[in-house]
Amino acid sequence: MFFSDSLLSLQAVRLESVFPQCTRYMVVVSTNGRQDTEESVVLGMDFSPSDSSCSIGMVLPLWSDTRIHLDGDGGFSVSTDNKIHIFKPVSVQAMWWVSALQSLHKACEVAHCHSYFPGSLFLTWVSYYQSRVSSDQAFINEWNAMQDVLSHRADSPVLFSEVPTERERTERLIKTRLREIMTQKDLENVTSKDIRTELEMQMVCNLREFKEYIDNEMIIILGQMDRPSEIFEHVYLGSEWNASNLEELQNTGVQYILNVTREIDNFFPGLFEYHNIRVYDEEATDLLAYWNDTYKFISRAKKAGAKCLVHCKMGVSRSASTVIAYAMKEYGWDLKQAFEYVKERRAVTKPNPSFMRQLEEYQGILMARGWRIVHMGSGVGGYACATMHLHFL
Image (cartoon, rainbow, N blue to C red; front, side, top):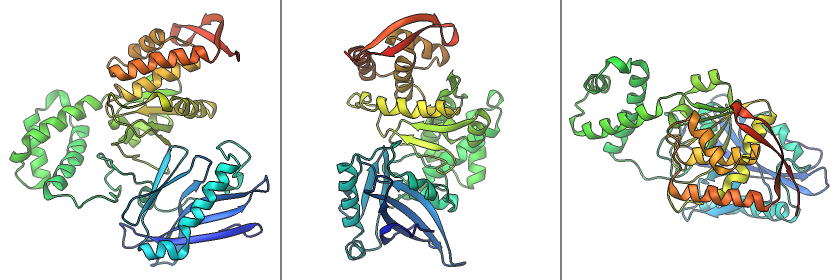
């Protein structure tokens, strides 16, 4: 399973798991790359004692932007290329005895020193492991579990959090069952009382004390249930509901998902290419800082001939702002033109006031960097499209 000809080092540490039938190891693999410098990758390995099988559940190349953060409770996270993975050794002693953390720090220093970045000639051998990710989906979900997530896929593990109260567990179950019921019902001919009655029948309990919670969740779900809005042929803008609807994603042809939330899980890791911008819809959020990365991600989907879903919770503010920023840079539109174009295709588009100011600033940045309009012609969806060339001032 591992390269042997040029393998420099291999460090492994056993991790905790929410699945008792699985033994997990984080493995740091280092070898000489094409540039004759040491390159490293973190592998997530899943072992099944029942049949003595071993599979790969995660592949994490260590780029120059890799950062390691201790959580103060014996665990740590590794962030790189806008991905964050959480690791918790079975004991603090194991972490230090195996020297995995020291190996990670060394690998980060080397990557930073030689400026390893995605798309370069560095770490090209990692594709060998990426093509061999074959763990069960539940195990892949565990490798991709995130902190601070409020909306989880049903089988997605919840790590590093306090044990939920009985009420919290009931609310999570209500939310899951409520989505299933509302998906199956003709909402034009059903009342909220009908839905609540069926919910009580399925859960075999009286939910009177959860009436307000159920009503609020129904409103949220109704607001999310519309199909994602096609903004461009390769870009869809939608909600949490759209991101969690596998059948809809597959029918739409989505292969890339840009998740612009901190509180919503990646529902299908391993099935789609994800990119996370982990921010809240708050005035203090600096969304502009991520728009270069989101532009590259959407452009990668377009280059691959694939479709990309950009979503937040409701598809109104965070994700809409990000799509507007993409349109400004990709098509050379000013803010007014990009905003009107997106809003025409998704009427609920409404960036919060801070994001609108950031879009205005982004417009200035694009101009300051030397964008010049050299040709006006027929554009996307009948809009005038500016063909742009980048001139360095």
